[in-house]
Length: 241
Image (cartoon, rainbow, N blue to C red; front, side, top):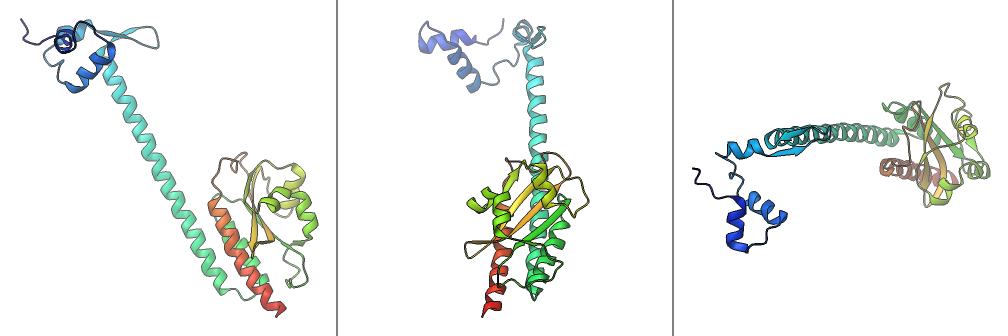
């Protein structure tokens, strides 16, 4: 006869005749070795399965451990993917800042921004549109437009002065990427802000639908917008002086 004391007996010795599921669960957590040598008991226990078929406790335990292993591997994979993305973002930011430091005028700054950011793996098209103003001196190769036009088309970006990822109308997409020659399906808009003023608009496009969406973190885009905006503002102020 087994010398093991049953779960119910052990609990009832210390807690009276009332027995709850929580008490049994608590006892088993504190005594995980309880079922060692209790093969007959284990074979008698069964749990309902999603398919309706009853399975043994051991089978259920194996299933749970396997599912947890799969979940852990998925989490690790996501962490590694995020780390790779962060490395790419860091490289992009570093190369952009270094290139901006070598630029001598607004035309070069605009070219640097478009060239550097277009090289990112997830960007299929990149456009920068500067707001026309008296102190703006750029070549005809740089896109410019009136503040009124840009504000009427992208009011929220100007009002909030923050990046926006989400759906745009086809007319808005055509306006932004009419020179890219690519079928852009999703976009990210980033205001270029200098001295708290929107000086230009950066537009990123991807050919995959919903790649840029409202759930994306825009911290990186906002940082880029402020870095480029600081350079823009300094150069425009130098032209005035």
